[in-house]
Image (cartoon, rainbow, N blue to C red):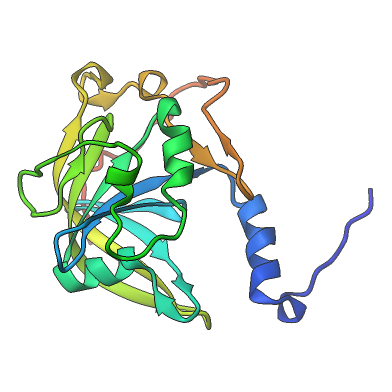
Length: 212
């Protein structure tokens, strides 16, 4: 078996992105709503997304720049300190993709795509009415990385909105959630086959630190 070796210091940022976005897969999609300074609901998907803490619950999303300037989502989170991470399902795939199109700041992607919003409980930013899961977040910190202006935004979740049929004994029925993931380019996927293996014994998450 032969391999191609690519040296990172010889790759342009665009080439590195194409490479890494095809390697780090599948990626969950944070479908983020924010509010502009004039009250316009901004909506955009971000697939460099994960959770970083369970006490308090914290989510992290990497937001890059366009032509050196912050994207609207990053700018509005910094301005207002609030955002909502919505999780879309298979039926939202087209809308998720279309919401990544670039528009002027006074254009609401949610309105453009006919996606209704409802008021959040703990923050001013609304959530998507039809999203099976939405998480209201307050900004905790922003950490810059690399040479292209990318920033890792970390928010504390203040409220979870979960469609009732998805909750099974305090856990999410992932099959019923039917989430969408991102792979390289304009390509998306769904869960596919789920393989269940034996449960592994783990230290309870309530044990925060070992003694002595």
